[in-house]
Image (spheres, rainbow over the protein chains, first blue to last red):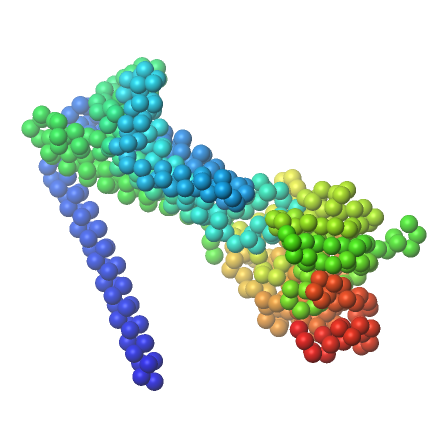
Length: 292
Length: 254
């Protein structure tokens, strides 16, 4: 009886400990987020909320545009590679090697990726800094994340889904496309969110690729013009680069305020992106009838 | 073909290897149309392996090698037939109820859809017919668009039977379909199996000898990869010819 009492006591204590740890992190997060956001907006002037060289909205647009471009590149590749490794690749030396390579890629320092991007996408192509090169560099960082989360998600599905589908005369691709992918969509989406988060926050990989200037004319919609907002082959400074540049290189008197506001906006952007994607993924899941 | 026309499967000298392990040894069995054949035997005796050769689900296991022949309506399954097409004619119900994480409707419509049926009216019709055939329409007709994962285990298994019926197979293979279910659900599924016999050839693997005795016309007893005895269920249980069969059904081992 003593043993049971002791076990129950331990159980209670551990429950409380876990609640405290969770609560601590929640509070930390809230304090941190509200500090950044309040500080950011308290020093803001109306001039900063403009699409000009003094404002930060151009950088905000560049950030979103760059992340979208890099997701457009890395999602099909990453999800495809993850599915290939999980379902199609024969287990053996080659597959193992590929997996080790991907893991290594995911721990590559971003400044190295940045330099590689500079070499491959700027020097070798002979172009100036451009958003697309930045998106490619960020894709290198996103790819392993999306690949591994997709791989883990597909691998974790029970075999009886596969047998159930194949047993009805479905081909391997039909099984993968109609049963396996929809079944692990929420987890794949998590991978995409993580990858996007990497893109939103990335600075080092973009220093020598997307460049640290931005010059957009919002009335110019000729996509081939270097001033057109949608032209991916123009220099495009993102918010995180802007924070760095404002702190280190800017000469404006209120550079610090600009950096603070950029941080706040970046934080809100990431938060809104996560929430939106979660809602969309839940909708898809419900429409497919995957929820209970 | 004469009197062989009533035979659905003719299995001749079937050997099956998982790498170097021989799971089936020279199996010779003839399975008749519109009959229920049950496969019994202790764990690891090869009965499930044998079942899976009939729709070539064993192809999915790496390192499987099959020798000998299985003729379905006189055609060799392994040499003259495509595995995908075969599985549309020989459906399978698994031990663990395995509905997809989709709605009830989408589960049943899955098979017809992958065969290219897209018209809503046609699919509606198939879904209703299949669920009725599986005796679960009344329970599910108001929740067709809710997730199948919210159903009870017994309902899920009958849904899986409906899903199999939706592709209009000729044969239904069942791999211990009630071993994960409670007694009431088990009775419902047994009743269903007997009802389905009218239109389908059914082969069922079971751990439960009473179940074999209750539902099946013929029974095969497997031991260590061998089909030791095969015959009319009543005779096999009352007057087994082989000593090993007798030992097993009287509970001396297994």
